[in-house]
Length: 194
Image (tube, rainbow, N blue to C red; front, side, top):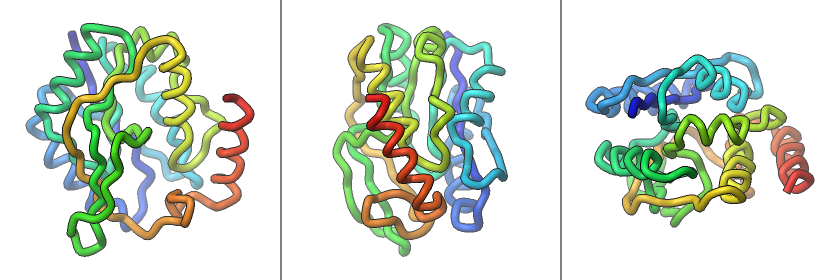
């Protein structure tokens, strides 16, 4: 089975170093890496990921955030699990946020974020990829999780991933680089479609 790592990236000064760290880490991965970039604001994550995946011919799609480090061994287990059975496989259980000074901060247990997930291409196609209504960072993954879980169990590989700090967050945990009105529209759409 062939696989590709797709990293969505909306350029900003605070996101540059995390992306460099991620790309350096993924140099040892056994799969090619592609970065889906757009300068459009708010970042059209769903659109750029869908377009990038549409260009691939691989059997497995690995969606990997531009601001997280996932151990390659966990990713390999996730790819094997995705190959063996249909459905979405999270390559982590614990999402460790680093603080601005690179100390371990908040730890989220089994969050819905697509920080590092693997899925068979036929499953991705069956779901139609991400819903392109969503703009900015977030909610497209929650929607995708719900649609995937309606067809197959979502699975998790035990282990941590590290999330690099790239700016403060709102009280609702959304990124500040997505306008508040866009976040609100995303939430309304998620609730209306669920």
